[in-house]
Image 1: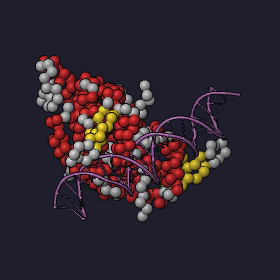
Image 2: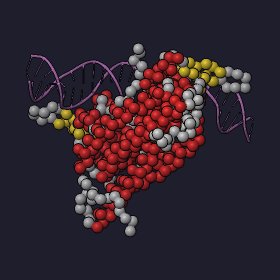
Image 3: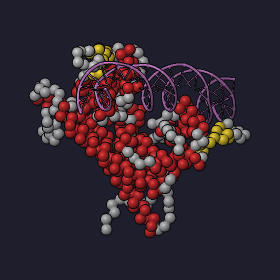
Image 4: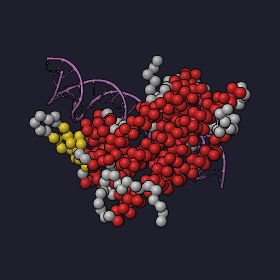
Length: 208
Length: 208
DNA sequence: TATGACATGTAATCTGTTACATGATTAG
DNA sequence: CTAATCATGTAACAGATTACATGTCATA
């Protein structure tokens, strides 16, 4: 209902808090030390962002204060926050999303299984497939039109973008395969091991 | 001397203007219609950015005003602007640059040949090679440490990042090969055609 | 007791987004 | 004449960066 215009950092925070309550400091450490370095770990970004999310009632912070312990505010996602997160994840992937960068798409996908369900992850991958196809066609068209007049470095840079998209496309296909394979496994041996290493051989299935 | 802290959009503008004078409107169209869509084409971004560059004397705008012609300001890069651009291009690529995104690195590379020289392009590629190697090692290390506890979607998302980096690495190697091959061609037939389609067969050279 | 890691925040500043405003020229 | 496109801008606002400020707790 609300316009719901949350910047990427907000969703990153929301997604992490949905998985596990954490303080601002914890979140900063995550951004600073893991491969989520793309998101700012500066207090001037994190704390105001948390404040905004709390004002929107998407997260709530409670003061943790015990003896022999520094005072800290631990945030957790609210029900509303979970809904908001799901809405974001469930948006179908557009070519525009792709132009803005794979980053945010991958963040949505990474959170999808925990925040929603494995079935959703697969839906996301399929809408991504369509977007990539269109994007790749556009790129190739543009490339064919201008490659003749470009200096070598510019041409190679363009090719880099195309190759990256092709690699993404290949990954996308493999990821779909992995999910389809797991679905089958689950139908055979119902609801056994949900997380962790999924069945060990989701590749190279003969299409019988 | 000056701290020289120009945002990416500024360098994109400077690079384009170094290749060919253009008006704000021309530049907006480039960003809107080509694969440089990642940069904002909104007037609220372009015109102030041009204003800042002009204030720093990196570009200069002259009013073009003829009969039967709309008034427009055409900007061109100054000598200072060219120096600034070269300094930016010549910075060696760090792992940090890589974390922030391939985008800006590729922009630097794309401009390198026109703004500096083919030799510089090759230097840039080689420093990139080192950065990628280190980054990839870091990624793999982190992945090995956490992959066991991740849900499938998160694990696949991580793999996507690794694969993208590997694809980038492969492209980097091929690009180096292309430049080395061209250097040889130029030594044989000295300083013939510098720009445009570069010798037509820089690939698949027998290493005799 | 002094240093460093923990933990939270604020203020100034910069850049970009969105939306609006203006006016000239061309095509129908 | 009027609509669309060319062309340039401004103003309000949101979000990020940088730097600073504050205070607690553990340890050397």
